[in-house]
Amino acid sequence: VDKRDARLVMAHMYVAFAALAIGGLMGLLQVFVRSGRFELPANIGYYQVLTVHGVMLGLVFTTFFILGFQAAAVSRTSGTFTAKQRLTSWIGFWIMLLGTVMSATMILLNEATVLYTFYAPLQAHWIFYLGLTFIVVGSWFVIFAHMAKYAQWRKENKGESSPLLTYMVVANSLMWFVATLGVAAEVLLQLLPWSLGFIERVDVAITRTLFWYFGHALVYFWLLPAYMAWYVVIPKVIGGKIFSDSLARLSFILFLLFSIPVGIHHQLTEPGITEFWKFVQVVLTFMVIIPSLMTAFSMFATFELRGRELGGKGLFGWFHKLPWGDARFTVPFIGMAAFIPAGAGGIINASHQMNQVIHNTIWVTGHFHLTVATTVLLTFFGIAYWLIPHLTGRVLTPQMNKLAIIQAFTWAFGMTIMSGAMHWAGLLGAPRRSSYSTYGDAAQAMEWIPYQIAQAVGGTILFLGIIFVLIIFVNLCWFAPKGDEEFPIGEVDKDAEQTPKILENWKVWITVLVALILVAYAVPIMDIINGGPLGSKGFKLW
Ligand code: HAS
Image (cartoon, rainbow, N blue to C red):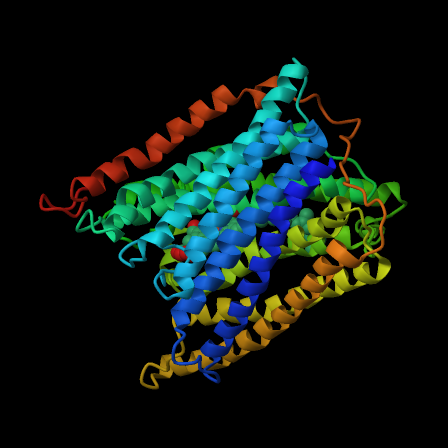
């Protein structure tokens, strides 16, 4: 990656890792409070801490890390940005940073204790919402710059299939753009005018529906950069080949199509949306599981082919041949392994009837700590261990490599305890997003206490993991020895099929995407606007 592009990417990384440090500390405070053994100072509220934790990690760390990584990916595979593209990216970066400072200040002043989902009826200071608008608008500048580079590449290489990593960035960016239109509408048409006193009331169901239209795609915006590393980087790190270029592209297209028209699976217990539309979106949710199953298949194939190439015999002999001592592989691998139970949990959540059992319980918190806070996060750490030194002109030393592997095992251990306890307590009915309470010593609530203590133990181990990763980050930025660290890009297996041209025909996919969104959302939103299916005319099915 060119030095000028490297500076741009590193700017994103500094913000991301600062957010990780703050958000991680807030996580530690939270598990302590919920254990019932610790009280926050009187002037700091539990929900304020929870908001900082969710916003810093779920929104700020992820967005800055992802956009930085995607910039590096495009620059590495499609060529250095032009001055105009780089400037657009920088403008986007500064707008996002300004928005982050505005929103974070309001949370710290306790003027925006609305959690990371920030929908009504909770209301924040208008500066918080304006800050969020800046984050979204800034991100548009950044992704437009990346897409401009892609368009330039295609113009200069007519008829050729674009570099796989750039293609993946474009798919994720398109998904982000279409999804953020929902949250932009929520903030600009409802929350911002409401907080400024221009309108007296907002429709809570609309704000939630618009939020989840964006919110579920948001989770795949986090996941897809991890998949980019799994498909393109990991094969090179293990010395193997990409199993299939077409399969990788197809799975990204399926994510583009099915990530958005599924948000109602977060609202399965809500009145105001009929069972029929909930059913439609549950079916579409099951469609979005398919590209993850394809990814699992592809990864297993890559690993097995490489392991056998290295002489692995028998059913599982190939498994031992993989480079377990290399943090660039082992750290994301632990993330992949975590995605097996994490994904199974997601399928439970999406199954309408089972959702009634777990919805709004701490099971859901357990689910997303396995998905985003383990699968995605460990993969991002694995990326940072080669990307940061690549950009700073340093190398990952054997000591840091060892610490990185220890970090990942520490993380997996802490998370098994914390997330395991969350899942179990959720099945016993423990609510999510609640401070410590024994609910008048109710027998049911007393059952949750041991699990809450387990969460505090797991959370403390996780915090240790954050300290390790911050040590490695600082080392790779400023102290590691100078040298050349590779930006690994895999090659496609020679036996793989030719990639069909249709996969790069965005007009087709955007049309299908818009059609799916209209099918999934037009009627539910009209229903809510017209007073809802539970309105005065009585309950109608659709
Ligand atoms: Fe989820 C709630 C359904 C995936 C994040 N999810 C959440 C929330 C978050 C979140 C943050 O349907 C809470 C939001 C809130 O604050 O309220 N989720 C799913 C489904 C999937 C899924 C069906 N979620 C994710 C991912 C996330 C994420 C990914 C973040 C990155 N989720 C739900 C539902 C809810 C929900 C409901 C609402 C619950 C409620 O009622 O509130 C699927 O995408 C999962 C598919 C995944 C798989 C796994 C494939 C496995 C792979 C690994 C292969 C491993 C290898 C290694 C090769 C089918 C790819 C080999 C290993 C060896 C050990 C040999």
